[in-house]
Image 1 (tube, rainbow, N blue to C red):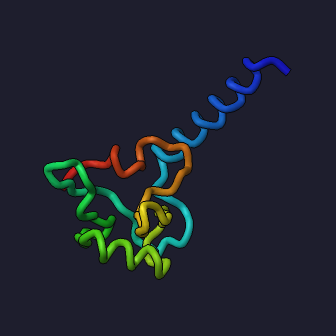
Image 2 (image 1 turned 180 degrees about the vertical axis):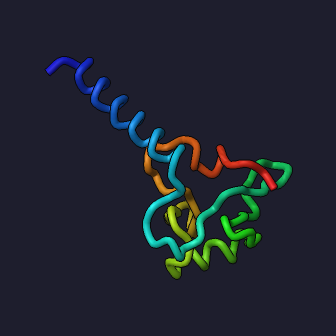
Length: 103
């Protein structure tokens, strides 16, 4: 298969995800909150999160709720000797933490 075919298939997949995310809120357990906005410090580090219900969580609160499975569409990974909260790698740029609005 030609390289163009791989790129074409991936672009089609990405467009489908983008279309789906633009018309629907995140899927899954509808009772789970999800992150809709972020707050950064002067260095650009994420320091707080706002959920779709309007709750504002500091970084540790959000990390703990994610560990307990209370927040949808987030992942936790261990790097640099600590746990780090990250948006779920779903290929949709618009719902990445760095793309979310600030509050």
